[in-house]
Length: 340
Image 1: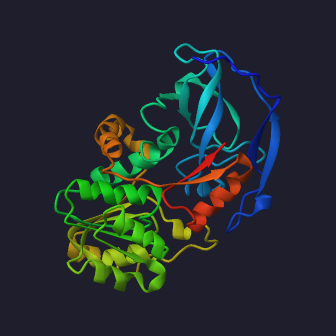
Image 2: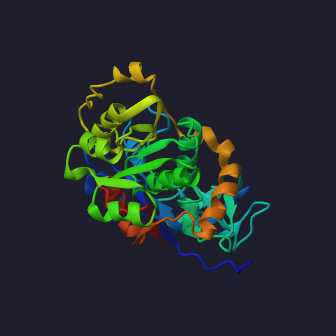
């Protein structure tokens, strides 16, 4: 328990000012001050310490019908956050507790106790609850093991492999007995990270040549699982290298998020007939039942150092937007975190 600190009168927060067309621009957003609210019954006031920025947020900036409601114009945006309870009006949570919640993009947030998950800063660094032990980690775990139905001996290809999800997918596959793990990334430095630190068997810089050719060279015997974070030419290349009975789990398609026209689909979809291949999209929200199993299995790997992770940390909420744009550009290695 800690004493409740004296609260400032205002909290800085990011609003969506207009819906971006193509790449988001700074004028599509507003950085404003708002009065610090008091928690009502069953609520807590949280001072956010770490904020998450993720590629899927680009979709919420559009008003197109999707699996989650769009951000409202003129209202504060949302995202994963970890913070300290500074005032509580709810049973089970006290000032000084730390919680994971979904009201980021702001310094202070009023959160319903039922929407706050208590986390232990002694068990793991607070930032990890947004990444390797949080939603991104569960995304990797569920997508690989449930959606792609990974089994020991599979050859696995991961695109966006130096990102928060992709890096974990490849390492989990390796730890669970993959015959070969291949990753793609956007720089030679990231390729080196994948092979020298994360234990990938092979990796390539997709900017250095056609993805299909580089994948064939890295996986001459083909692949059994493709974990897709990129779409586009990566998806087409994976279909071209898919072995019989291969599975493709579609987690994201960052290559098309800012397109203003529909992106063309893979030209080789007919190959799925011969390979009996399967493509399936998934959302982590459909797999929260795996959370206890995920933490039980992955946390010891993290603690022992068997599963490594990287974070790209940007300081200051005033830089939240730039951190988000950096994710879309691929500036991050591992999880992009904003530290307040």
